[in-house]
Image 1: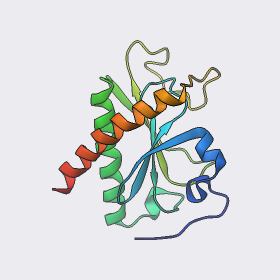
Image 2: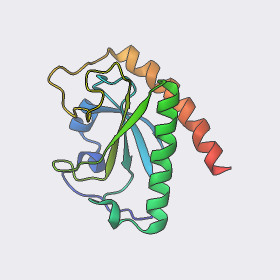
Image 3: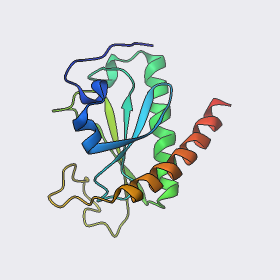
Image 4: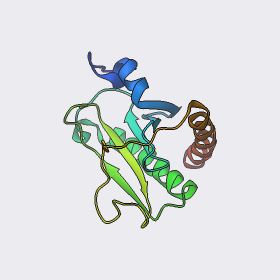
Length: 152
């Protein structure tokens, strides 16, 4: 596995900016799943690669398979847990080039249904620390089960 990291990348450095934006839930072979602090869409998580590449095509076919597999079972877990009608996936990287995927559960009752989710909404919905911790514990257990299923 590639162990390349980049200076000034908050995913590589695990710096204060990263901790202000997200909370780590669980680390797998290729990725780490983070709970986004903005819960405008309840259950929004980010799946980030455990080493630095800018683009998905920079991964070997084996690494790409593992990355997509972990993104997929994370999305399936989030969709089921939040009873979402649809999952939106966002891969951007203009300002944070480290390969990561936003997984955003959506319902027809969302204001932005039938449109892309807003990455940085004008009125983000933040929770208190206890609520984040409860979500983190529950999702970690569910993601551990999903991971065991694909590894067996």
